Image (cartoon, rainbow, N blue to C red; front, side, top):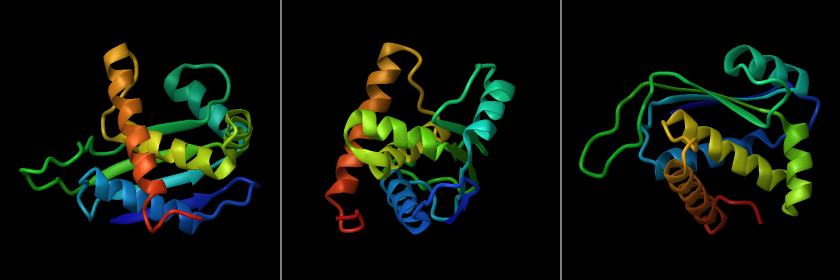
Length: 154
């Protein structure tokens, strides 16, 4: 798998930590090991412009996902597809505010947003109540597994 992490924000980001999380998540979701993923950290102006241009939503947001080849999570009984998973854009200043408000800090919020973004790339959504329950349940399960894994920070 090729995971590219780019920090274009002025915030300090542990890109190796984010890369380890991404690898963990893609393995858990049975994404092909050669799938490509790009995660970019940008400022609020950049994410606002992208949110308005591509999602017709005014103002900034915390994370945006741009699917590539519309890959799906692999099933246990079949080989996952190889391809381009896509791009995730995260605004670390918004993550910091949300992490503080939630009481778990910036790193945990960036982990949550990375997980959320990857799930969107894999076709998960939260528009209707059933989708919301499924996506947020899986997100919580993955973050819990990450927290108990050997690759998670102490």
